[in-house]
Image (cartoon, rainbow, N blue to C red):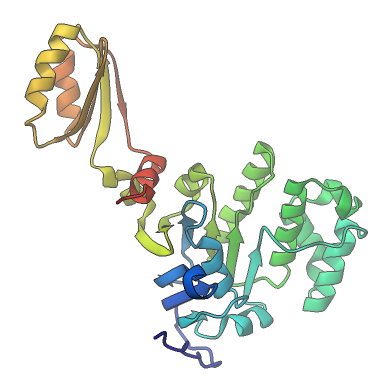
Length: 315
């Protein structure tokens, strides 16, 4: 039998973490059609952290974000932001979000949209600032209905900045943006992070997580399957990949030797090209060069390879 969700008190706690999810469960459907979208997720983010939330489609990222923003109640567990209920954090302007979903009024211009929402927040004096921060100056007079998908995301970003929130949640924030817009967006986010704002962002662009997030959380099938420093997660596959060109006969001899080497993970060969993943890349590279290898390359593991390893289906 499922347990009722614990109701968090509405009083903010001094020194509380920016985000704290404890045992969060979220289900959809009934009977044989019931789906557990989020399965006992625990997540604690301290103030000032920048965290990437990764996972394949259906991993539970968006549902977790909905709970975090107070858009959805957990069936079990608790969600708190800055020590209080997420809905109170939103109402107080301390928590804001840029979401994929959610409509904008197409007949208003970009500036009118920002101005109207600024009035609701009592932040009319911040209109010019957030338009500049979101790089909307060139399209401020354009009707929202005439904006591209990426431009609409930038409008949502401007709206999220209006209350000057302590915690900013981004769900696929650069979807639809071109390369230049994405670069400018992350430049603005780096400035926010350096100023101490807490940022949690979900993205399908693994290079964004690798370049921007100091910590990465990976979800799969509704659960957190990895949580740690991005660089450490990237290195979790165990070493670098060393590849070089050699005579096939020498490669055959090396492969037999390497299969018993504890510092070697994977070994593969394609004609005259040997590829090895090893925790002793410098030593192994030196050995290959001494044997006359050419065109030698050493590549560090990528976040993409770690992500694939962590989320691939297992029987």
